[in-house]
Length: 181
Length: 377
Image 1 (cartoon, rainbow over the protein chains, first blue to last red):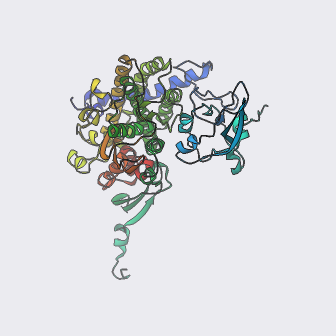
Image 2 (cartoon, each protein chain N blue to C red):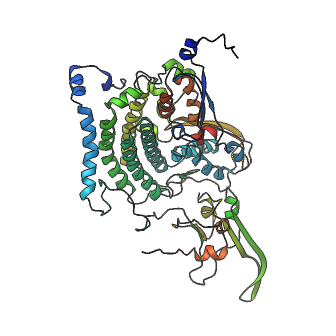
């Protein structure tokens, strides 16, 4: 491939005329002017790929978050029984690169019909969102689709202790205060 | 100390003393926490020294205590404006170690995503480089297009910046249904947008006088400093790992390597602009020829590669990023070494800056396109 043609460096007659008449300056101004004019009358309808207005009106309008977004963690509940899906297998904690998950469990006798089985039962689940880097490895490791990173992204809190999410918070999700005018 | 008698009045006026000036670590144009110690004669740089390490996190050491899957998210945080490219390097390195064949579809999607990331990285470079030199509008336009790419990433991967895009053996998810259409729409829009940037900059007189003849690096020097990426190609060396040692599915695609002529800041700028156009054509080819099939190879959950060592490198937006992995047969690497392009390209700063003005150092740091997360690791 030939080397790039560096047009700006050649001294030609037309180039000198261009410089004298400040043509490049006006070409550049035309680009910015085009967007300025379009921004004046454009309506915010969204979905227009060639729009001139791009600012998201975030607190006023809900931000668009994709389906696969990895945000606030959640412990899913069994939709039939309402109990937790977690089997306290500790795989999420082992998969976590930053050790932000702590699974607490006890061995308990669980009655399954006539049989009595000794089973691991989840007691506590702590998730430190301040250390989490939202890589989704825990969710991929989960064999029961219990732990999941959801679309929630408003994770700011007033105090550092608020970053430590306990089991109740993970199951119910955080409740946001809706500010209205 | 010179005695009072030794210095004559006219000498104190004309022969100014050498001044040492610290630029950074908190300086907006060093693109992070880089400290540059400048020795100045008036306003001309006579010597220069870089102080790095402010962002050192010890990723290579951390890797020795983590399993192979756990290390991938750390790679996002090396060159954090081109996380997808970093992921590709590491993931392909481990696949090489495991001798896993990745499905064709996954490879094509990987190429499409990394080329999108290259455009996003070059757009961020162009915007910040332009704002360093004084063209503010370009930054806003570049970020507008970068946002489109980040939205595509968010829909596909689930994160915008620290992507964790690839898994060892393929991808976590297949492309979402509208992915191809959305990227094609972007490909249709982008060439006119690149034209716009070029209208604003290419023959702009301030841009020309700030970039032409600044930071000239000969091809010989560039090779001797083992530079890679657009910094090397701007000096006229036609070397691109995508062509030299094709990885992923790059052997299937037809593209050209843009090369500069004079090795100055302006040529490197032109190189990167031409590279963006080439990336667009690669993405188009990848999407047109996208094969059907699975996106994940059969990889065991607990990865224990055979004893051995590999080096794998890819062409990241900034140059050659490489990984050297030593496996001792356990689930954790014995040693992981990263070859970061920014760190090695930064060595050219001294060579390029001496003899130029202080204001040009800003332009030269911009043209090398460093990211301190990668320099310090």
